[in-house]
Length: 201
Image 1 (cartoon, helix red, strand yellow):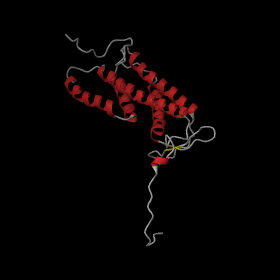
Image 2: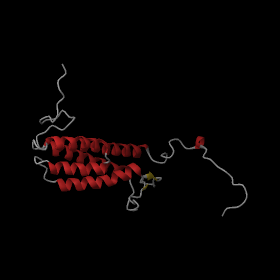
Image 3: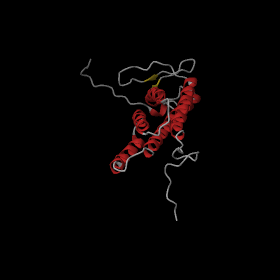
Image 4: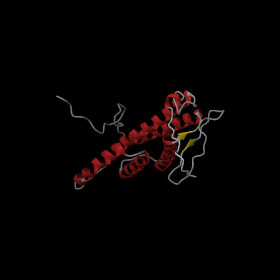
């Protein structure tokens, strides 16, 4: 309840904060595992963008449609560079389904796993980490758009398991391109190159 007396005003004494605040209560191993997991999700986004390029670049288009389709292609590629993970997954699905040369047989399973991983990625990237318990487990404060509160304790083992799973998803997305006989964009792996830069004179 407000009173007529003049309020006391306060500010944080940031010179007295613990070193590495607010991350000081977790072990360095925890932050390393979290950082590696988040970085692997970033790599997954890059791989999905390149896969979208690969599937859209190798799609069969009739000569009558080529000019119109080419106009649509640039915005597709731009979105592949800027979209968040959930939108990249949607674009990847559309690109695979539109390519008659696609050979992937487990697309539904892969997409289901990608969407589940995307949910965890949001928690790991946007959660506010609470102090760990005696076993090193931490509960991030995270509420999704459905107003559901995340309630799973996370430790180093959990993070390493997620990182391994995302690495497997990365490989599956790459395989969906290379199984068609194409070289994965940006790599020096086997297969026919999708795009070659003109030789400089």
